[in-house]
Image: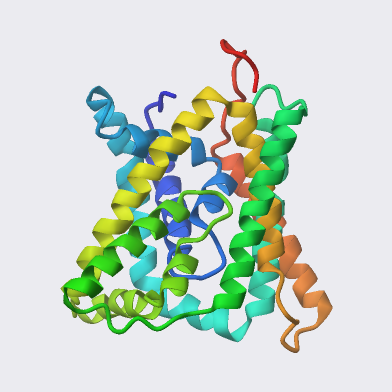
Amino acid sequence: MQLSARTASEYIVLALKGMAYGLTHIIPGIGGGLILVVMGIYEQFVDVVGNFFLERHRWREFLAFLVPLGIGMVAAMLVFSRVLTALAERYPAALAFFFMGLLLGTIPSVLRLHGDMRPSAGRGAAFVIGLAVVVAFRIVQQRVGESEVGSLQGLGGIAYNAVTSFLAGGASVTPGLDGTYIWMLAGSYEHVLGAISQLTRLVIEWGILVPAGLGAVLGILAFSKGIDALFKRAPGLAHYAVLGLIIGSAYGLWPDGLGGLSPVIVALAFVAGAAAAYGLSRTSPEEPGAAETMPVL
């Protein structure tokens, strides 16, 4: 997949999308991979990140994509880490329905991503597997909750932080999974988020941020390469798996109650999310796959 030259407005749009992706790293419940799907840049992302160190002749176009996206991502995590966490705590039901609308609103665009989306037994199995993975992931998270593993200090804590952050980074680029949930299950979410929030006060907790950052980056690189290979070798299976992941994520986001809000409010939040998904998917739509040069999967 070749990335075309970009205009100034396209760089701005990429930075804004990077902000949206960055927010998924600080709000539990929303996977970064699905947000990339919503915004129509998922396949570009896994192509760029998965091949960054393998196709050096493409570094210029890779950087033209990653730099604005990364700037937006870091800016969002620094500026909104406190605000959006408080919003998620105060209006969880409205936020959940907004994101449900956002996710389900991506289904039409996912169906257009590949030129041949005819159902088959293999694709049906991929859909069921994608759905089951997310549902199982959410059930485990709900039952286990957040565990305590200390303050991530010392050699053992640093190694634990790096390994769990590797898995969190991989989950963040897998549609339907959520890196913050991995941190929550590991008991390190509050430590990592607290260290990020402290950056706004120019306080750097190196012992937490360095292993978390390195682990997450390596996880993103490794998982992106595998996912990119899947999309290139079996695009039909990959897109049906994404559909299963999307629908499973909607189940995972369903709140326990409305939190005292009117049903009209949460319905409007859902519609707003679906409308946002439609608008985002139109800003940089993926081209449908060309005719297959290999067996259709």
